[in-house]
Image (cartoon, rainbow, N blue to C red; front, side, top):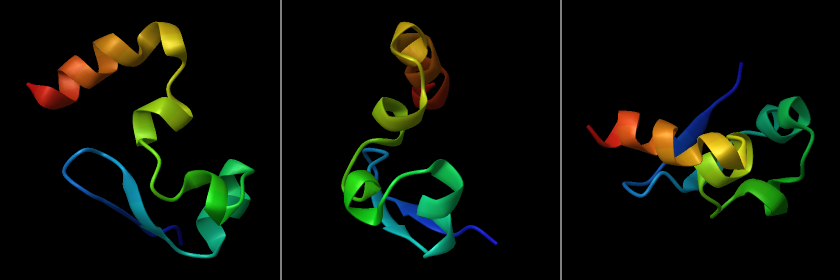
Length: 54
């Protein structure tokens, strides 16, 4: 089971040990980083962020 916690800016503040394995990155690469910047293609970020901010 994957467990993550995001802050109000959508930055990853916690990920269990299984999460980095699933996404193919280390904890250091994902923690304190924005989920949109990490996992959404650059050409789609604006559109996706607007959906979540509405």
